[in-house]
Image (cartoon, rainbow, N blue to C red):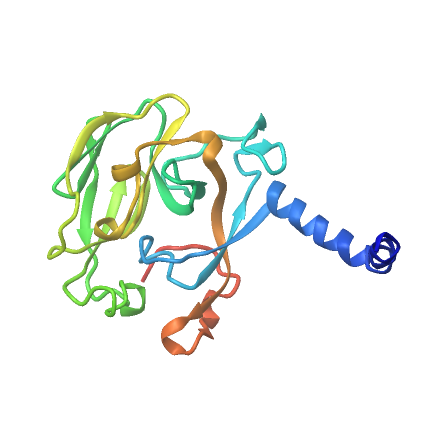
Length: 232
């Protein structure tokens, strides 16, 4: 048995080295992630495969959360992947609160360090970028949320029960507040708390490809290799 195993390893050495290199790359350099839910609509759609840059912020010891060197700090507005403080599931959300920030939400409107965000309703949003009707068939409104120079679109669901107010809360040192862009349909820091820096696993700025489950998993051609941009 031992001889057969050694022979099998020798015959497939090149393939096994390739697999090991891919696993190491995913752990240390770049990873890809399937978006499983609608919590980041209108920017990330169910079926998107996103690329996460694992060295955007920190160089870590492979296969661990141990930070060897800090490269850059996460910025407000970054879309990131991270391990949930509640159970370790990998999630993708937007960074809203930085260490030391005082964050408050009043009737769906954010206030950061005493400065309220501005909101402008988006008329005639692209229906392909709204929560699929089989998940939520009632009214959905899209707003452009402006936090200083940072602007991105969010979805609110007026007829759904949701946490629309909290705080004010101070983000602790070394931790971040994450929110989904689909505000009334997101399990985020409002429920599991702040996210420690070492749990952040990468920054997302580009898609690999996207498959539409409502159309027999046909690819969304316009999203192949696309950089993340404002939703229509």
